[in-house]
Image (tube, rainbow, N blue to C red; front, side, top):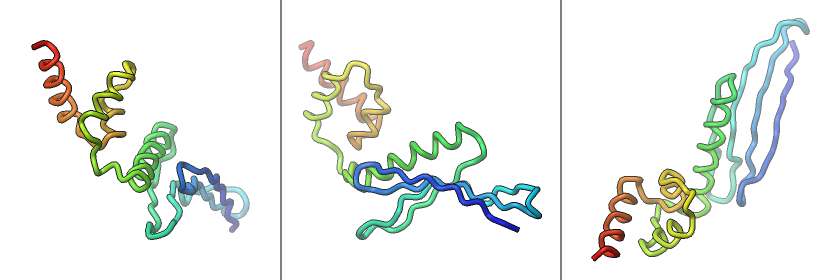
Length: 126
């Protein structure tokens, strides 16, 4: 029995990310995938964060997106939401940005963003 460990290490912001796929070979012929995971490597007070993905591209992409969001939450502390003026300024400067992306960046829920933007629009129409 032998093990093929395939790791890719990348950086996002200040954090090291490991993308792993470990395959075990029985008698050098049959192949069994044992591990498919993406890990945020420990740094400072932050420990390991490991998410597994399935054997398809969509699963890998979605897991990478989740890892990116986790890293950005840890590095930028986006759980502390931006001030309304900053949210509106970015929204006004970025006409192609979706509310989902603005929510991810700002720490605001999409529902709260809609309420803020409608309120602002109504103020501008008065």
